Length: 184
Ligand code: AMP
Image (cartoon, rainbow, N blue to C red; front, side, top):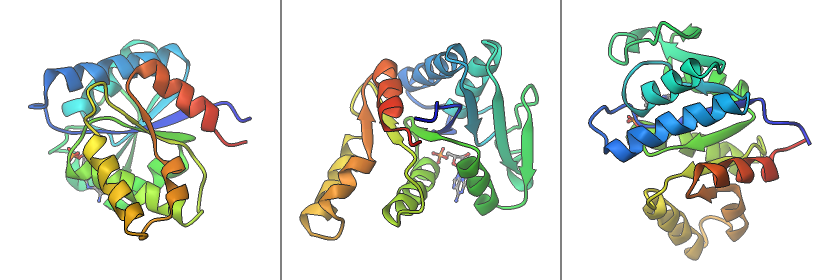
């Protein structure tokens, strides 16, 4: 099985998020660095995104940010780590996808949902088999899982698709889930 070298994190850009979510981002960035895994993320210094990147970097981890030029001011490029600057949101997502072996979804808003739903939709089309793990310590993602179950109950999504959406309520469980599902 191929070892996980690069992990993409999708997460919120809001600094006003619940402190427990900001703290989870810090702890997750630290854990990535401690395991020698590179963080791939959307660039920037704000919200959970900024926390995860700063923690990974300050603990000696490798980080790649992918930032569209037009967002650099709004999301404030985190200059301490290397960034690929791109022109569009599509390019950003494509590079984040290509550069990663697995995806972890921390609490986030509409942008986070947009990113992970595209990754899941590519999985649904069998375009990849990379693990996608939703990590929250308080059930933050439960309503999203309920929504997917609802589409399964309506026979609009195959029941087998639930296996593509992993859930973890601790950082340790998240790494175990990724390791068990990584593709060779
Ligand atoms: P949010 O969860 O709304 O705070 O957004 C998290 C991140 O997703 C932010 O960096 C947004 O810029 C990013 N984002 C929002 N929409 C898209 C998109 N269509 N493609 C790529 N990134 C996006």
